[in-house]
Image 1 (cartoon, one colour):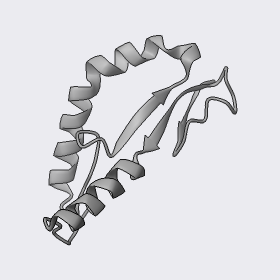
Image 2 (cartoon, rainbow, N blue to C red):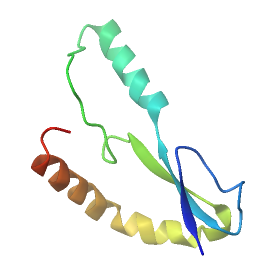
Image 3 (spheres, rainbow, N blue to C red):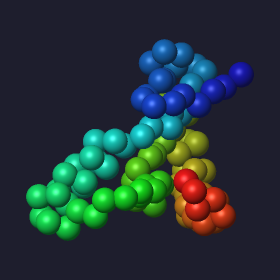
Image 4 (tube, rainbow, N blue to C red):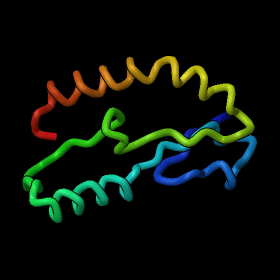
Length: 92
């Protein structure tokens, strides 16, 4: 059995089981918002920040790094599916 961790790199917890971890890049998201405030370009409201904007990403367990090549070839598809999903769910 293999798993994908969440929120931070979980590979250290189960090195033979965790393939990768989905992480939220809150540091870069918050940095960009603060930068907008100080530059005077901040616009309040709801923003959706996903894969395309580097709001989230995958961290691969080095033991399974060959999977990163598979994912990298499909990232454009994932971004497109995320975009389609968000456009059909405008309340998100």
